[in-house]
Structures are given as structure tokens and as C-alpha cells.
Length: 462
Image (cartoon, rainbow, N blue to C red):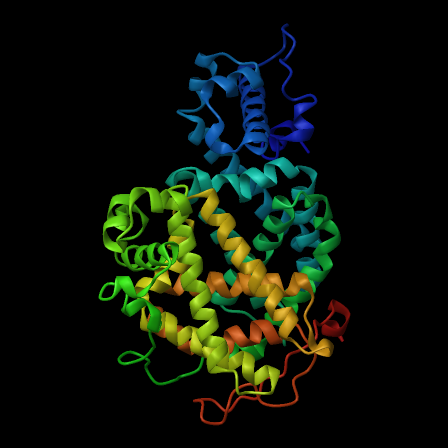
């Protein structure tokens, strides 16, 4: 790795040497000095943000750690956020490069997928602090940093779509599947970064590749390509508890619950930016003291409201499938009900799928906690012989979330019920073969889905 490459993933290991000033003397070009200064600043920002959080980093603390002057800092970056955007942009570009290099060195697309992902995971594991900053702390920054991160995700999604297109059948893919697969990878990286286990990533790469090959299958692509009836119109349902809050606020005796339900309704209409504690308290009939007793602030109440809506929706979906004894059919029925609820109330679906990250890092972590719980529940409810691994469950739920949020962000929430079979496949494909049809005969398709075991490159070649 060259010194310029090392500027992308510069954190704990860089602390040992990269933060030292270059020794003065002849032979150092202006570009070499500038690159060294940028490397030290990136390394310092990664270390400080990993230690105390991005929001605690100031220009003063940054230049002290990097041993550069204030003028030097502003010669390279406009602000701390500008420096972080540089780290995120260069790091994600490098990870795409590692993935592409591994693919190009292999004999076929599937071997390239495996070797490329291993290279990507090895690079992330080398710099756990930078992994934490790029994949977690960056959510505490502004829109430019988010844009850099999204650009990196888009580049990875494009690359995976290309790999699936070149791979032999039954491996196949769509744009949706590529984005889901990338979300599964990113979710795995986040899971290890936030639990201090990033060094485990290289050892997880083969299992993650197996998961990708099991879900990126031509059978699931068939569901994306179905010519089903339009779902515009009277599709979807509503969460019954949400409608009564404005009319009968006194009917909810618990003050914290009343605040949460009020916040969910207000935020579904106007987002986090339109919320104030005064609005919540007035609408919910709470005193300032009552509000402060339960919540540290508006964002805390907002995140509790988002989680409450998600929990209610999941509970309603499980109730709709309670009478189904077959696990595969029950999974499909619950996911269909969840998609109908999301389609029926686009305000609440935006709240849970998109606005949850509006509070930044705290919102991201709350979302990841919800994914963790959903994955754990999935594993608990599955029959022992069909139970997916923890990694596969986490990756599948992350993939479903990403696809759903993409649809909602594009204004296509009403189309979510069409994706219920796809979401079911993303969960069931990681278990053993399914003997019975996944979808009931009354559905628009008569496809009988069989969840496939992950094919190895050798099997594909044969």
C-alpha cells in the first residue's frame, strides 16, 4: 500500500507513525508534504471521532492531534466536516477498488466475488477506527458526508449488479437485489464496528458470500419481473392505535406513551425538523416536568416514537399471520401484512424507514438495534432445522430495510406489497429447501419458491 493509499484508511495504526511530522530537509516535494499533512489530519480525525464521537471533534483538537498549524488545516479543508467527507469518499472508493481488483484477478465472476469481498473485509479490518468513523460516526455529520457515503454505496451496488449479470445461472440479480446485498455487507461491517469486533470481518467473508449467492438467485429475480396488477388505489392498512390519539388524548393514561404516540403522529406529518418539546407537550397534554421525566429531549422522544411505530407494525403483522402453522407461509403472510401497512400510511413508513436516521448517529444506532432484534426474532421463530445463521439473518433484514427505504424514498410506498415475495425469499433462501409453495395459490403468481443452498464456484462451473 502506497502512502497516498494509506491516507484513506488512516486510524489506529497510523497513530503510531503517520502523525509524526516529516523531518525537514531537501528532497521533499510540495506534493509530498501536502499528502503527509492530509494523511495526518485524516488519521487524527479518525482517532478523535472513534474516541469521543464526531460531534466532539473541533478544529483545535484536530490540529493538535495532527501536529499541524491552523493555516495548514485550512489550506486543505474548509471544516472538520470537509475533512470527514474526504475520509468517507476516499475510503469508500478504495473499498470499491479492492472489490473490483479481487474480481478481476479471479478466474470467473463467482470466484471473483468471493476473493473481492475477502479483500474488502481485510482492508476494513486493518483499520477498525476508520471503519467506525466511516460506517457509524459519519451519520453524525452533515449532508455532504452523507452524500459521499451514498455515492460509495451506489458504486458498490453498480459493481455487484455487474457481477450478478456476468455470473452463471442460477445466480442472477436486479438493481434492487444489488442494493440489498450491499446493505447486508454494510450491516455486517457496522455490526462488528459498533461491537469492537472489526478484526473478525475477514473470517466472515466466506459466510457472507454464501449468503449473497443464496439470495441473488434467478428465482427471486422472477418476482421482480412479475407483471402483476397495479397496486395503486385502495391498498394498504393503518395502525389502529395511531388514529385515535388526536381525538382522545386522555384515553392514554400513561404520560410517556401519550407523548410517544403524539410525537409519532406529528413526525409522520412533518418530520423531526418540525418537532419541538412545546408542540409535543401541548398536543399530548403534558407538563414540562412530565416530559423531562421520561425523555432527555425531542430527539430521544422522536426515536422512541419511531421504535414504537415499528414495534406496533411488526406486532400487527405477526397477529395477521398467527393462524398459519407452516413457518414459510407464516413468514410470507407477516411480510405481506407489513408491506400493506407501509403502503397504507406513507407518512409512518417514511418515519420508520427514512426519518429514523434524521437524529444522526443516535438514529443510525437505534435503527441497527431494531434490525438486531428483528433478526434475533427471526432466528427464534424458525424451526431448528431451518434456522438461519445470525449473520444471514442480520444481512437479510438489512437488505429488506434498504430495498424498502429505497422504494419509499422514491415515492413508491404503494408498490411495497408487490415486493413481499422478494422479502420472504431474502429470509427463506438462507435456510434449507422449501418443499411447499411460498406463496398461496390466490397470489398473482403460481411460482413455487425453493430456497437454495449457496452454490459454490465449483458447483457453478460444473
